[in-house]
Length: 148
Image (cartoon, rainbow, N blue to C red; front, side):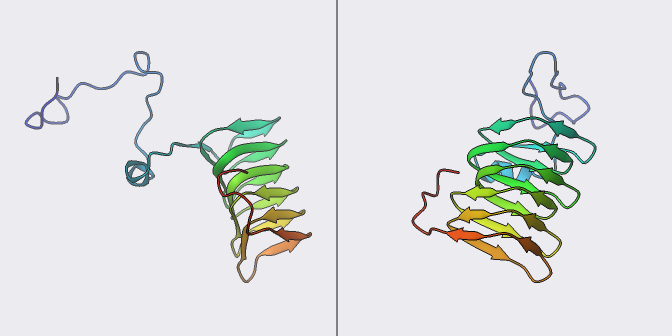
């Protein structure tokens, strides 16, 4: 058992084999501590063709072709991401490129470098100066926040 008096070199290292949920610390560790929500990330070199479903927040920095369903959770489309997807999520932050319809139970935000080509249905929307958007917007503030 490790105690505060031991140095990090003396502390037993967690094993991936003995703990399949082991994850290396990331820059999001601070936010993960303050929030019980878990999150996943697809890096910029990852390419996915097919359906993505999940019950946790997700950040995508790579290429995805296929529908994305994150029931009531947040999707972050990173600056290097290119999605050809129908998206259903609790909240959507677009910093990269999305081609397809976006359906959100909460907020959709398109940053200055973000792009959506497709229809958006959400409770709230924010489009920064410089962002690209081509499609229709349907805003329904009564839309349930917990569903996407």
